[in-house]
Structure formats: C-alpha cells, structure tokens
Amino acid sequence: MALFRTQTGYPSAPTPHPEPDDPSNGTLLHLPHVAPHGVGLVQTHYATWDTPLPLESGAVLAPVTLAYQAYGQLNARRDNAILLLHALSGDAHAAGYLSPHDPKPGWWDAMIGPGKPFDTTRYYVLCSNVLGGCQGSTGPSSLNPQTGKPYALDFPVLTIGDMVRAQVRLLDHLGIATLHTVAGGSMGGFQALEWAASYPERVRNVILLATAARSSPQTIAWNSIGRRAIMSDPRWCAGNYYASEPPTDGLAVARQIGHITYLSEDSLEQKFGRRLQTQATPRFTLAQEFAVESYLTYQGEKFNERFDANSYLYITKAMDYWDLPGRYGTLENALRRSTARFLLISFDSDWLYPTAESERIANALRRLRREVTHLDLHSSAGHDAFLVDAAEQQPFMHEFLAQADTV
Image (cartoon, rainbow, N blue to C red; front, side, top):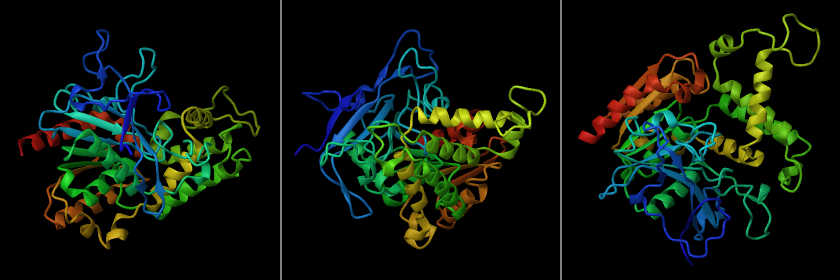
C-alpha cells in the first residue's frame, strides 16, 4: 500500500501516474511581470498517504491529504527548511498569488520573499493547511471512503498534536529531517510549541507570535459561543448540510464574534468610532446603522465564501484542548528536551493572548537556561497585530534568523 500520492492542483483531479514533488526544484512559477520583492505566482500541492494516522482520541484517519505550498529551494544538505504554521482561519496560501487575477496575496506575504525575514533566496519555506481544514487538507467536508459522502460529524475530533503529526509525515515525505525554524502566530504558535515539545530533535529555531501555551477559560468561552452560533443555525442539520444550503448565518455570527476578539478597543475606535454608515443622524430603528455593524456583516459574508462551518467547529475544539503544561505537568517539563533558540513577540493591545502568556513561556525557557528573546511590541491592532504590523516585526525576525545562520 503506497504511503504517499502527490499532485498539484485540486486534490480530486485525476493523476494516473503521480510523481513525488522534488523540493530542490522549488514550487514557484516566476513570471516577468511579477514584482522582484515577492514570490510571484504559486501553486498548491497535495500529498496523500494511505497509512492510517493515529489520533490522540484513539481514532485513526485514512487516507489523509495535506495541502501545502512551498517557496524557495531546498539546499543540498536539506537543512534550510522553514515551516510556517497558520492560525484558525488561515491556510497553505501564505505568500504570492494563485493567479494573475488574484486580488490579494497569501496571508503572510509581507514576511516571505527575497530580502524579507523568510528570505526565499536562502530558505525553503513551507506552509500546509492544517488537518481538519477546508482548503485542500482532509477535514469534515472531505469524502469519507466508507460512505462516499462528506464526513460531516463522522470526522474524528482532533488536537493540535494531531495536526503536527500530519505535518511530520509531510516533512518525512519531502526528505526533511530537521527544520531550520518553525514559526507561527496564534494557533500557529500552538503548533510551533507542539513541534518544540514533541519533536525537539527536529527543530533548531522557534518563532512564536501572539500565542499561548494553553487556551484560557476566556478563549474557550469565546470559541464555545461561536460553535453554538453555528449549531443553532437550522441549516446546520447536525453537520449534514453539504447537499443543501450551508449554515451561513451561524458561521457569519461565529466569525463576527471571533473577529472582535482579534481587535482592540483602540483599533475599533480609530476605524469606526460611533460613526453611522449611511446617514448623519440616527433613524431610531433596529436595523444596522453603525459603521462597525456593517464591517462585521462584511467579515461574516466574506468568511462564508472560503470556510466550512464544520471545520470551524473542529478546529476551535482542537484549540480548546490545547494545554501544553497540563499535558506535561509543567511548561518546563514540556520544553525540557528542546535545545532550540526561541523568539517570542507579543503585542500590548492583544487581549486574546496577552503579553503575560508569552512571558510565561519565556520564563519557563529561561529557567531551563535556553536561549530566548521576548519582545512586547506596542500596537493598537490587538491580536491581529502579528498579521498587520509586519514592518515592526521584520527587523527582529531578520536579526533572529541571521544569528541562527551563524550558529
């Protein structure tokens, strides 16, 4: 039974004679009109294995597909790979454009490319869609081989550890034994910490942004409300909505709730204040009038265009289970085997994963006498700062990675 099948394009496209992707060749399509500071047009690749993947719940999953993108070239020693780990609503498309008509680049485009912190002239940069996702990786919207229908709620409940174990298989397939760096913000930071704790021999450097070693009760509460919004939508149909209209109202509300937690009070005040959307004076109606209301409606509608409601349920539940110190007894025990260098960046307006969460991780590493740098940056953007305040972070990432290359 074949371990891997690989292809480029939509995962269900016919590939009668698939051949493994050769990371040394890169995966970029360089075109003359592409700006030199970016990575250009990119393709999504898919790796599938038939060998069952054991999950922390005791369930097994097979076959499993991971969608991924890669930028740059793997060197002859195969030791220059950087794995980027996305947040809840992210995917494998971290940089570049999927077509010449793509209106916006990947979610971390400001950080990836020649001369940027994740410099594609020096590093082979990878990003995969998490297990349980809905952008090409196996998740609840994928076909269940036992029934020929989407898994829906027959899909097994996942953990952050399960997501990382799937990524390990991808790296094994690509022939990458050791990662130069793992980097991620928010839920991506959960995964980076999981790499450091569970696979310390495979990680030399770790970058953590706006993250935590456990999901707090407040975070769990917000996620629970979002899941309740989805499950309360009559079109959710206990998860079996794939042959009919999806629960767009529920998912939109879940996104609106989540989006508010990503912002700060200052950012909302600066962007919207109490401004009315279309008129100068109140109309004394229950209809939407404030600009911030219209903004949240827009966010919910856009999210429905690209995300699956069941994936939202499964991924947020995996986030809720995240408790690294609880699993090992202490955070020091969790990270004791890691010899990696760490860079932690937090933001003073982030109330979802506040500065104190990063400081706890940094203090545990200091007690273990590991090399760690923690920077708390000023920002009015809230939790979203790790995505939108790229210029403020770039010098520190440049320095951290430059030092790593001299070690």
